[in-house]
Amino acid sequence: MPELALVTGAAQGIGRAIVERLAADGYRVLAVDADPAKLADSEAAWRQSGLPVEVRVLDVRDRAVVRGMLEAHSELDVLVNNAGVSGALDPIQKIDRSSCSRVMDINLVGAFKVAQEAVRRMRAGGRVINVASRGYLGGSGAAHYVASKAGVVAMTRSMAVELRWRGIRVNAVAPGMVKTRLLDDFGDMLPALKRLEPSGGAASPEKIAAIIANIASADADFVNGQVLLVDGGKSIGVPPL
Amino acid sequence: MSVSKAILVAGDGELSQAIASSLEGQGYRVVPISSRLPEAVGAFVQNDPVVGGLVIVSPAPARDKRFLDITDADLDETLAAFLDLFESLSIATPHLADAAPVVYVGHRGHLGAWQGAHENAFAGAVAGLMRSLTLEGASRHLRVNMIATDFADDATRLQPQELVRQVADLAAFLVSPASAALSGELLLANRGASLRFREARERSPADATADRSGAIR
Image (cartoon, rainbow over all chains, first blue to last red):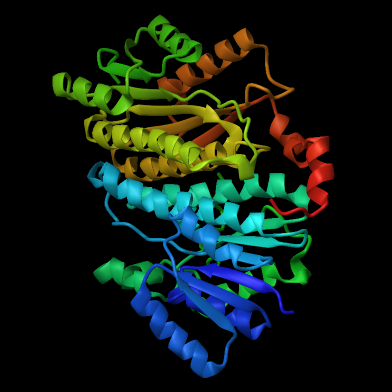
């Protein structure tokens, strides 16, 4: 029986690329997303391509639904905790409590709940890959998003410390600029931001998916508790938290 | 910076009192805050629109829960505490004087630790928040730094009174002009214990036996 991988935030962008890469690598993929329309579009494409993908509309904040879905499967091998929202690029004084709460609740608390429920279904050899962001190192604007991703990195480290005794590896990938719809949020600033990238632009979602597939593979079975910055080198020189 | 501008010191424990005393000894006007942070900061800036500095002390948690035993209520409580901090900084930031110091005293959970994963995750979130505040406040020369202490149960922990005094002195240093070159830093106040990769060895023997069985729970 092929291994089963759960991917959250699967309907578009990096998540969709992860689903397609893992399916191509031989996994059965459980692809979940909170957006039913986008998930239906992706499902149609996956079905047409013959990829072994099962889909489910799901909000990562709803633990009962996550648990119920996973109880239908005897065992889970890989979790890619990818679901997230970006939040407005405002300075701290313009971000209100409710906006901050929504970003933290989806990006960090939701990821935490999904990770707990997924790990309950894992045996030794399980892998968790949390998708953070280069932004976790800090940035001007969207401090709530930065905080949420820094939280994902810290969660990754603590999960790795505890779960290694169960034989479960936990790592994070922190992408830099990626060609997804989130780039539209930058508006007129985008060309200037691209010029700041040492690589000259944004990575394709497939580049990020390839790194995640590698971390999920047996080739990386000595990689645990790490945060891999996939940003073309922009973060060189920035110390870790 | 004029010493007449108030330094707000938030926290209701022994450490925050020691920091306040240390700052007062250096001639600062200190306003202690022990009630809920957003309301207290909001009330202060209504009367005094310029804040000379901000010191926030968050006690190290008990760290007594395994990853799978952390409940939604635990997560909600930790999120609420983070939101209080975020809201307080959102209120205070426009009122901070140019070059004002902001010091947050938390714990080393952001590096990852055995048990208390929810508290550790939010310690990481605070570190990210403070780094963003550093960058956003750079044009006004705000200085934002953090101190991460050990957990209360760490074997290498300093004696309680010694720890309080040393961390209080460190926080007072980060408030003072003597640390003007520092901003965006996170100082581990544990006498180098982190360099010993302690977390890589730490475990409960009972957990190790049970968990290796691969039992799903």
